[in-house]
Amino acid sequence: MLSLGLVRTDDELMAAYLAGDTAAFDELFRRYALPLLRALRRRLPAEDANDVVQQTFLQLHRCRFDYQPGGGLRPWIYTIAFNLQRRQARRGHHEDSFIEEEVATAGGVTWPADGAAIQSVRSALAQLPREQRRVIALHWFDGLPFDQVATTVGASLSAVKVRAHRGYVALRKIFERDDRDV
Amino acid sequence: MSDAGPPPSGLTPADELEKLLTGTHERIKADRGLLAWLRCRPTSQRFGMVLLALAGLMALTLWRFQRPDFATYPALRLALTFSVYLVALALSIGELVRPLYTRGRTELFIVLTGALPLLVAALPAAVRFEDAPTTTGHGHDCIAVGMLAGFLLMLIVRAFDRAPRVGTGPALLLGNTAGLFANLVLMLHCPIDRPAHLLVTHALLGVALAALFKLLEPPRTLPSGRW
Image (cartoon, rainbow over all chains, first blue to last red; front, side):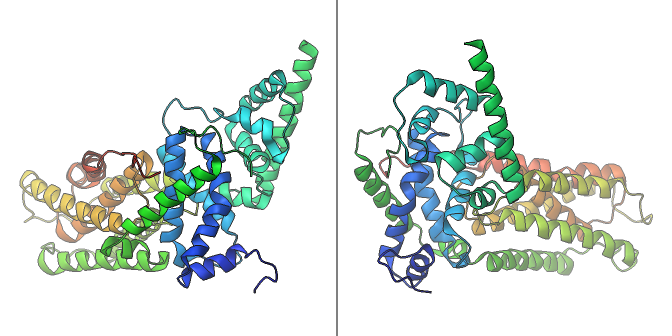
């Protein structure tokens, strides 16, 4: 189905790329590379994150004949990237290295540069189990809807929602406890 | 779009994006030749081609290196064990050549492919083959044949695998799967049913093959200058 607007959908771009239009690939790259880079730099050193972004799009090129329209390209790209990231992760590099910046720009909203608040959110997130933290990071920091988060982490939609809910409940308890302590 | 973290080179996000895109184009341009063509095939075709190559190797074993008691060995026992091995092999090959846009179950398959040869080795012997070669002498033969079969599987799978480098989990799975295939080939080749022989020269080949793979795998290097 062709869109009437100027912006082509992912499916249209993939179809164009399969037909030999390399500009369509560039458009997909410009659409997804930067948010992906942000997500990866929370987990990897900058140089490794750049490498994974390039490898991700090389993989997208390699698996272009597998693509089924309507399946959603974004979870595809994120799943490729996180599979590659897991293979590349170095011991001792913490997932929340860049969480401070992510907290400050979460949801596209720039929060006041309150160092104490950022530190408090960062510390609270670090206390969550890894699976809950990952779901919240993908949903809030990377802006993925829950169905795409589910595809990316390889869990059912309901499981992902349960993890997010438990994560939010845990965060609330942590903040309430911190408030009492203050 | 918001900033992509601290750019290591001090570039603006837009410049950094273009540099990354140029590097990606270079990688795609360099991805040519027979291996690149094989890796770009749809997943079902890659899976089918790997199984076809393995079927060819098994047919070669049956033709040239068939076990001497093949005609008299209990057919049902052979068929059942062979089928179980074959199903496990197909499942683990599917996991090894799975596209990276899907989540894997590597740990589950490591356990499955590692445990199956041990279980088969623990089964009581089906028949006593009086004219079987001595365990020690034939053991060397089994190790050589099994290692060669497993090594060929690793080469075939890596030829079709799109992943750039194999981590510890996938390397273990690749080793175990190669061990599974080695056991399948040895089942067609070796007449010895003794548990000690099956354990040492058949079932543990997967561990040796995984170690061999990690030894031969080139170290990861960052493509400096590409981005």
